[in-house]
Image (cartoon, rainbow, N blue to C red; front, side, top):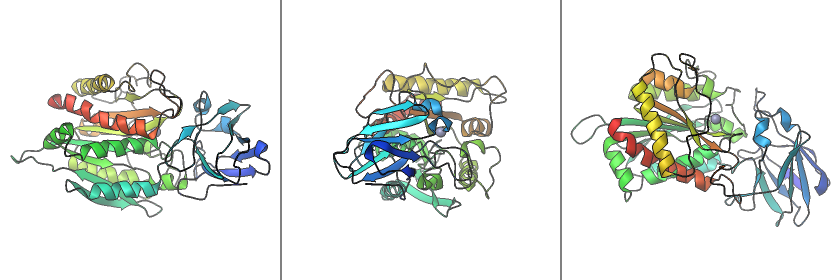
Length: 378
Ligand SMILES: [Zn+2]
């Protein structure tokens, strides 16, 4: 038997893998960083054997509370991901599984590879409503892809509302790109009246992957230089966080009416949105509109809720290095961080898959209904 992770998004270090009942593993830290939590690896040659895969030292991971009531995902074909028996004890995460084939993959959440990202971008770019701009390069030399959907002006020559969606600043939060895939698929569907109406009145700018380097390197939270991109929006530096510098530069050109920054949360078993309560000179009407968006999304999708989320910043205490706060402050935008669980939703659980790519994509589609509902006030 063998365990390996030298592929797009892979991350594991093998301590010992001689005996299926005592496989010892370790997660690599993000490059130049202490963050770790994302794992993704392949096990071959263990068909029909009861395997105990112990990922050690995970109590020192970025979010140890993420391991409580958590089940890892596995796949034989890298398309269908299902949950496997997982326990967190004595600082280790232990997966018990009998692989049905000689080739099985395990991961923290269903991976979204850079190869799939390129498929998504190519598919979108083939649509006549879409313009693709590579707005810059990452430190590893990958393209920063920006999709523009629709035109900035309507047929009367008036400016449309400017909507931005960005996702996966934290590369291990792969559900964020699954969400984007669903949202984009619906937005480009000419037979969908919600999408057609939105595109009459809005232009969309979408960055499905803010962190290609972290994604390909198998990072949890940072880019190639070990930078947490969601802490550099106040004054991004091209030499260490070009991803944010390029995207914010483009935002300065377009302005923003509403922006959604899509993430995953390791610990909380809920979908929720965090807003921008603590920014200086807050525009309460914009905050009300964000709350209205949340209420509408909760009404449209039972998977979403508004009761549980992050604590709100006190007045004037918002961290302006975070995208949502900085963008609300900089553009007087309705600015929201959408978080999805790694685990499952508390009130609408589906234990077979837990929170999943498909459910993420459906929430992405539902976000367009919520957007249409708030559009008259935007
Ligand atoms: Zn995040």
